[in-house]
Every structure is written in C-alpha cells, then in structure tokens.
Image (cartoon, rainbow, N blue to C red):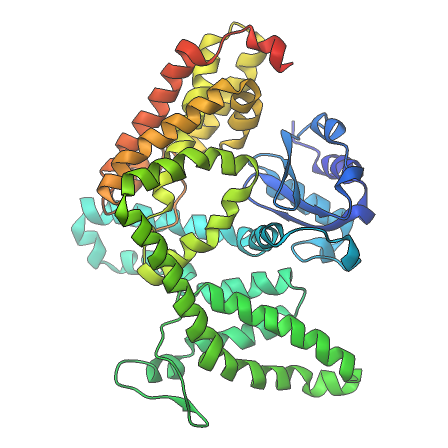
Length: 458
C-alpha cells in the first residue's frame, strides 16, 4: 500500500509545534531537517509514534525527523502544506528567538545549500564510476562517441558546480535565483577563463584579476550569493520599487562581479586550498591514526547530524585536488551498520525484531541507507552501535595505507563496490568493506546482542 505522505506531513507539522513554530525545513538523504522557533513545543514521543517516522534527533540547531529513503516525498508534502517559502530558506523570524551558536548556524546553512542537489551529485557520480569500470575492462570503449556523451553527462554537473550552488544558495538565502546565476556565471565565462590562463593578463581599471580556474568551485559562489541577498535587502530599503525594478539588480551585478573576480574568488580559493592542504598535512603525518579517529567517530557524528559539516571540505577537495581523500576513511561505517544489524537479525528469536532488522541490514548493505539500521536496531541496543564504531575505525587502516582517492561522488554500498575498487588505491576498499561488514556481524552475534536486551530497550 502506498504511503500517505499528506497525512504524514500533517502529523509531523502538528507534532513539531505547528507551522507557526517552523522557521525553515530542508532535507538530506533520509531526514527532514527543521529549524524551529521553540523546540520545546515539539513532542518527540508523539512524533516517534507517527507511522513513517523512524526516529527524532536533536543536533546542530536542527530538529531532525528521520524518515528513510522516501524523505523527498515527505518533504514535498510538508512544503505543499507550509508553502514554498519554507522550503530551504528561512522564513522571517524574531532575531531574539535565534539562540543557535555559530556551529549550529553553519551546519544548518550547509544542509540547506548542499543537500537539495545531492540527488544530481550522486546520479552523476554513479554514472562516472560505471564509466571508469567499463573503460578499464574495455579500453576501446573510451574512444567511442557513446563514451564521450555519457562522460559529459557524468562530468558536466561537477564541471559547472558553481552554477548549481548559486541556485541552491539563492533558495537558502531567499534571493532571486536568476540574479544569483548572473552574478556567478562570469566565473566560468569563456573570455574570462581564457584571459586568466597561463601568461595572460586581465585587469579591472588597473586592478589585476587572479589567474584561477573556478570550475568545481565551492566557497566563492556561496559567498557571492550571500552578498547578493544582503545588497538586495539594503537596496530595497533605500530605493523605491520602480527605481529598484529598473536599476536595482543591474547596479548590484555591476558591483558584485568585479568584487567576485578581484577579491572574493581569489581570497576564498586560497583559504579553501589552505584548509585542504592543512588537513592533508595532518593526515600525512600519521594517516593510520587520523583514519582511526575520523572513522571511529563518524557513526557518532551521524547521530547528531554533524557529519554534514564535512561536506564543504569534501567538495573543496574535489575542487582543489580533483579527488577527495577524507571521505573514503569513513566508508566502512555503512558496511558495519549493515553487519551489526545482520548480527542482531541472526541472533534474536523475536519475530518482531527480525521483521525490523531483516530489511534494515539489506537496505544498508545494498543501498547504503543506514539510518533505519542505526536507529531501528543498532543504537536501540547500544552495544551493536559501539561495535560499529570499533569496526569502522579498524577498517579505515587499509584505506589510510592505500591512500584511496575518491574521484567521483558515488553511493557507498555493495552494488557500487566494484566501481569504488577502481579508484586510485581502491584495492583497499573491498578489504575495508569486508572487515566492517563481517567483523560487525560476527562480533554482534557473539557478544553484541542477546534477547534480554529487548526488555531494557523497550
């Protein structure tokens, strides 16, 4: 029977305190992420009892309702009831009500900007991974027109990522998305790109313009759209409507684009490269220790939704290095979640628990969607979750030794494992997956779970 998303949305909105209590709503792969005026008005117990809700998480200034793989349908139903103004961007709220700290605001901003386009990121990454596999097994295929066209489909999204970010950031900052595109498009305008190449010189009224390739750029488009939103609000206050409609956006565009190419782009490109290099230096000093710590805490970060804070770092690695070395360290988590859930499934004699654990370990293993296994089984009994952390940490060791380089944004699951193995250093990924999955399954079965825990878990 098809899920009634309208009823689900009504129940969720009611139990988070109603529409008046909602400042904004976004979603990631499995969660609805609310920013509420008063979290005290939300009723956790009633929300958890709603059919279609897996769990409720408080973290990073967000009230997170775990839905599962069909979260986008639930999100659309919520926005349909709340109104399009709630989707992504924040509705107007009393500044005195906003008591979130800077980290919480940053995490919420990252979720609002980056997760809406994750579907396109994953789709193109998966296609690129498949093409990598095919070109390795059939080298002649890489010389065909079919490969060229499919590779354009796979690589185009990342190649013009600043434009994607501009649209998403415009929605987040409640500004005109088409003007946002007008501001960001010059970063990749052919004559600008051509004039900033090796040996070329470009200036604006005598001020030199940096020689930078902004393809796949992450931070500059976010900053420029934020500046656009601030100037737009200022100009609308000091100009009458007629004058603004005729000249407002034109003046903003003429002001922002030179600033973008002269200052913001070069400065934040440098900062982004510096951060990536600094983290890489720490990693290079002791990659095994760095991997163990990062991977071991990754499941804990997922609980609080804090793992999203690493999204800009990962994307900046793609932009500056054309690959990411950080996220592969955490990939064992997906397989460990599946393994621990399988261990519970095999050990328990409870038919009710088997009905929950059975599909959840399969979903985690085959689709890489771990929240149902995490909240429905592993975290519920605590010990399996601890085993997940330990196995994810141990399994990061071969990846750290191999120095795996993620060259495409693919899903992490059993189906994509052959493609992941073709990444540079990718020979270590199947080893990581095996250690995580079988290690967690065996450890959970032997001493991570028994049916006496059912009474304690409730």
